[in-house]
Length: 122
View: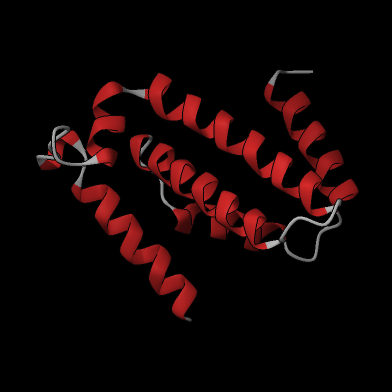
């Protein structure tokens, strides 16, 4: 699947920009975000999420839907930077989506609550 290839290539680029891999914050935006730490990329995730919402609201009033795609790409990108920082990747998210496949959202939420109660000893 070409889309998966794109995610895999982007994951590899982000990994190569990690401080431990020699990512240079003076030459790479990703390296700069990772060098600055979670506050930097988490702030960007919040900003990009807001821009996705605004683009969607604008599309409801006639603005081009392509703006949603562009803003969503920015959001996904910054989320991938966060995943890399925490030793995760898009593959982990895809695996979680696969785990949830075929499970209704209501059912999944109920199971999550049961697991949380069990984990807290209740």
